[in-house]
Image (cartoon, rainbow, N blue to C red):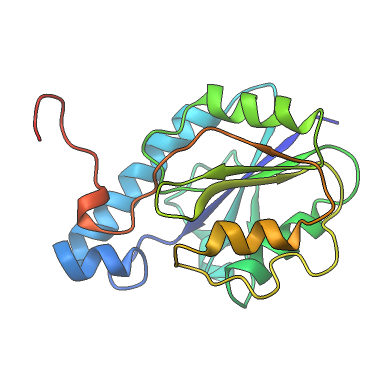
Length: 195
């Protein structure tokens, strides 16, 4: 079985996606940015070496959406916090091939980062991709998730990565490259030559 890459996306509706960014630049520009960022990211990560699936939210709207490429399978994220949703996705992938989950708001993400994460899973039980803010942009497992994965993680804080690593205690953990996600206006990529 080929490895599985799951990209988590939300329907890009103003006020429902990238709301922290939207409070700074406006909800319509934030939704527009996310929609175009997702398209660019999918062009970067689709690769014959692994399967790609979209974890969509909201479930019904995302499953029927025309925003996302029709040839990429869609999985419902379901209810709950980020940990509950990612835990279900990892569990639902079943035993067999390794699974990696990424967000769609990572402008620097390229195929080489995904390939490296899957390579690192060859010698580890889990892989995590640190973000500069204390969170992470990627999590992957070689086997089914351990009990209690993501329990007590303080999401959207500088402690998210450390809390997640604590739930992986006892597993061999590899680290992927450090990449930044976009939560606020200061995180947006700058055009070349501009500060």
